[in-house]
Amino acid sequence: MFQLITKLGQVNIYVPDQAKALAFWQEKMGFRLVKEETFHGMRWYELAADEQNETSIVIHDKAKVAEMSPDVHLGTPSLMFVTKDIEAFRSDLQAKGVFVGDVMEFPTGKVCNFADDQENYFAVMEVR
Image 1: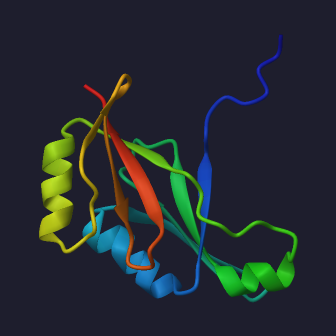
Image 2: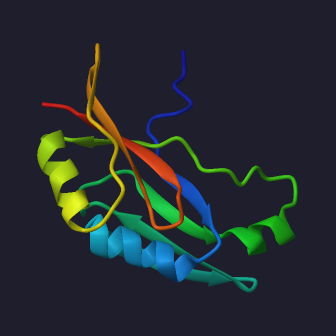
């Protein structure tokens, strides 16, 4: 059988304030800007955790996307990030003023959630 999907390439996040989202992901999460694009009056930013990441996030202007594609669901995607030390991750974000939930134990590992500055929630799982 031919494998149609080989990896997750990008995750689109639709936000009301791109500058605020860009600052959050760069300053608080430590992501780096991979690319900034403008096309037909739309601007978006692609960010990744580091050069080796095969997956990136792309920050889009929610209002512009809604205007161009009214049928697109613009809710927050369900993202699960991975870390090697969830307690250090949690402490680092708390020190930066980021909302971080409690660490919970699941059969698959330790997980907690966090929110960006626009109340979009994400999760992180400890993988050793």
